[in-house]
Structure formats: structure tokens, C-alpha cells
Length: 259
Image (cartoon, rainbow, N blue to C red; front, side, top):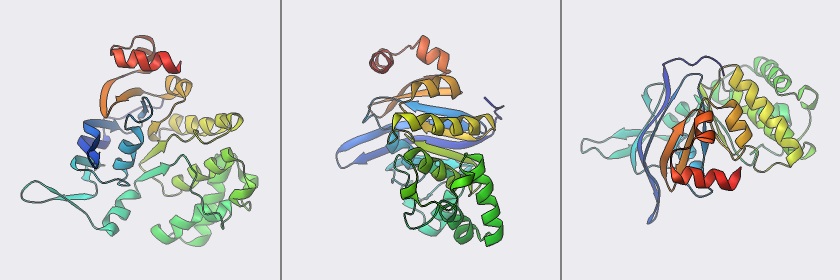
């Protein structure tokens, strides 16, 4: 993959997350450097999606810290050490640095592909409309959809909708991209076109954290594979080591089921 720097872009420290009495994340930590592609794998229900949503503050955490570009994300610390959620205005400002691509594309159904992409740059970043349109057309071309600018989501395949969603996230010029199982809702024949775009982003040096069940993508594109099991990171390393010489018995058991 592209050259990584030593600069930390995302830092999650001792994250704890529960839903009621159910503990989902049990004090996990992860550092992601600029230009690095980190792929999270593990069984359904292991906490992968919850973890990635905590990074982007779509879920509250009960303990730990999140930093993006060295800045504390979403929380202020009281004198007693407890966390207070920051204002939604400040959180929205911080989210600009992190693009997010979901399982279900979350496009505005009443807007064309082009309109979906220019919405946030105009209204959040204050980009002039003409500039936003020019940028959006370039992004559609980048994801192979230059001819779909005037199409509404209902006129696009699932794979095309997901590529528009990637272009929409890129329009905010993020420091990093989070992908939450971006191909799980797609027909098998459209999975490849989305993975191709993601592979190109990785090659261009985009910092990425990817939750996926696509083990071929993890093996080929990841700089580091992290295995999550029952709310804990049990193993991490280069793809070759994780897939060929996994050390943890639960990693071996998981891979034996999915490969």
C-alpha cells in the first residue's frame, strides 16, 4: 500500500461501551497512522460496528478517549475524570475530518447523485456552489460514475449508490475514512466495483479503517488486520501473519469458519 507516516491520525484509548448491562467494548485501544489501511474482522456481534461508530461519535462511550489528529474527539473531561459530551456544534466540526461509509448507503432519495455530493460541502464547509459542483463531478468520475450525475438513488444499483456515498464522503476532504461493512448490502456482482474504488483510495494514501467480511480484500489491501472477539482485540498484525499463521485459538476458529 501507499507509504505510511508515523503521524497518528486516529487514536482510541481504553474504549468502553455498553448497552444497558451488555458490555460491547471492553477497554480496547487502537492507533492508526496516516496512510495506513486497518481492516477489522471478527464474528458478527463482536463489536466491530459499535467500535467504528464510537470513533465517529455516532455512539457514546462510557470510558476511554478518542483523538483525531491529536485532538480529543467529542468529550471534555471533568475535574473528577468523568467525561462530558461536547456540544453538537463542536462534534459536527470534528466529524468533518472523518468520512463515514455505511452498510446502507444513506443517500437522500429526493436528490440526484450530484446533489447528494454537493450538499455537505455547500452547507457545512461553505464551499461556493460552482466550486462544489466542479468537485462533485470530478469525484463521480473518480468512482466511475461520471454519466450518473443526474440520476436519483432509485435509478442506481446498490453498488452505484455505494460509490456515490463514497464520493459524498470524499467531498468533505476527510483526513481518514471509516467503512462499516460497505459491501454487505450489495448483490454479489456489484461488490467488486465498490472494493475496486476502496483499493484505489488505499493506493492513493487515504487513511482507512474498514469493517468487512471480505477476506480477500483484507488480505490484499490491509496494512494491518485486527481481530475483534467479544469486545476485545485478540490479535493484530500484517495480513500474511493473521491469515497464514494466526496465533490466537479464537482467531483460528473464526478463520476456519469464513475461509
